[in-house]
Image 1: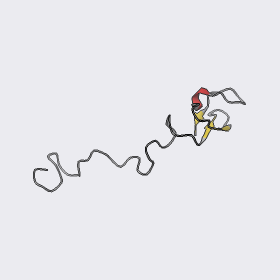
Image 2 (image 1 turned 135 degrees about the vertical axis):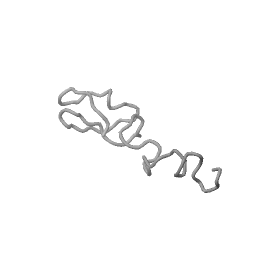
Image 3 (image 1 turned 90 degrees about the vertical axis):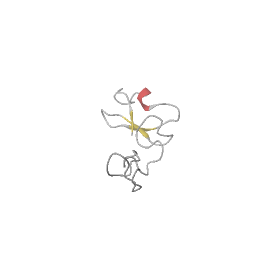
Image 4 (image 1 turned 180 degrees about the horizontal axis):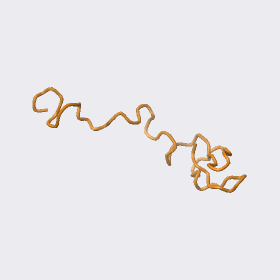
Length: 73
C-alpha cells in the first residue's frame, strides 16, 4: 500500500487473494471427502440412497441394488 489507499502496488482491489468462493460453508462443506458424518451415499446409476456411515467413504461402498460404486450426496 504505497499510497495508503488500500490498492497495493498492482492496481485496484483489496489484494487479500481470498476471493468470494465458499462463503458460509464452513471449513469442509459439500460433497468432498471428509465432509462430515451426516448425509447420504447415492448411487449415480439408479439413484438409491443409503445413510452415510462415519469412517466409511461412500466410494468404498457398492449399491445394494445395482452394484455400482456409491458417491457422497
